[in-house]
Length: 419
Ligand code: HAM
Image (tube, rainbow, N blue to C red; front, side, top):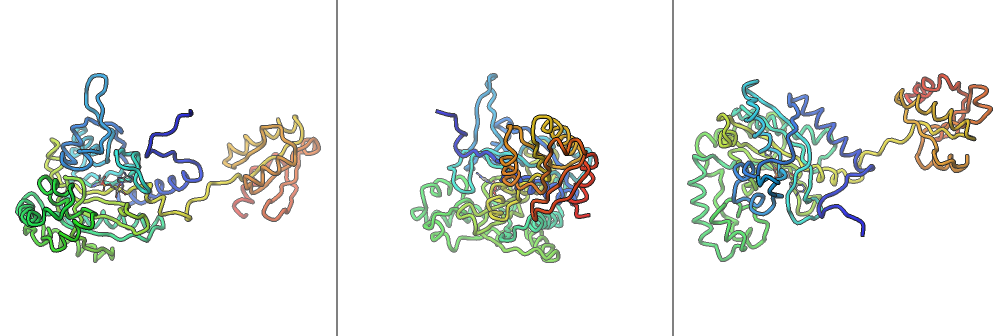
């Protein structure tokens, strides 16, 4: 039996890859305009990094990590997300000494052992961005404005921005206790996961999709009603700046996020086009994270976009693969040798040129030119080689023009650019 890919891991093939390249190029362009620079970290890190940052009691750390021991018995993990590795790198390379404000973006594969379904995979890709060193709520709004701008640029509009505040280590414990007391009254109505979460991570109960849990917690206390003065002022300012920048948003009191490092502002971009995997991007503030990982006490905020979900949303609006500018059909071996040299010269000057390598008849070569949707064809036979001229045929309207072979690159460039 032939070997297949690992369940939940996809190949990204021509036809799709052009959309990926478009989404990645736009991210570089938009994020670059906001002063973000790319960082590339290894896909494997020490397991401890994720346990300490994402949180021991989160779904990711409890059951979704691809962890293994290497030959020296070190526990390593394929990164389930990009924030923790960027923080590790930031601290280890002392990047705060270069600039008090750091803005990074990254793109690449992440790994989570989840149950695969549409929009949820075991290897998936994120495009993420992180800002370190700024507590000012303007940066929260700026990061959201950049995310909004990116979605406009890639032509995906069917998303809504949901924001919430999760408070901070000062105000969250009292809220957590209140939520705990509230949940205790309703324990028997909660699903078995939530009965367990209620002890370890009660905020996650608010986020549970099980209808019974939703119903039972309809009037649960909301974090934003229990914020301390600092968090309340911060959240008000974020909303004010978002309004000033005309970024539409909704408050979602139930959004608590699945990673433990968040404080204050959290957000998700959600869509109703992807069934239950409705978050296309998500993020928030993580002010204590750098310090908890052994770095300086610097605040941080960022997001990650799920690229597979973007590609699904692009649907029929995908980027069409580039087709050849020219197909050279050759008659006979001598002409094929000349066609080969001519084709190589054209390719070096940036023209997408193609020819036949299989010794096909002229008719079969023309069929292939049609199949490849070449814009122009050129037939090279002995006469053409002798005269140094050939007929250039425009496939769209079958019009023909006599062209000189030694200046074909310039002629084609003019015609392709409409000059
Ligand atoms: P996250 O919410 O775990 O956050 O993931 C961000 C996005 O990655 C999700 O909204 C979704 O689009 C995509 N995603 C997650 N899991 C999968 C999967 N199994 N298959 C396909 N797509 C998936 C984070 O990862 C944080 N590091 C975001 C962040 C950056 N917060 C601050 N900075």
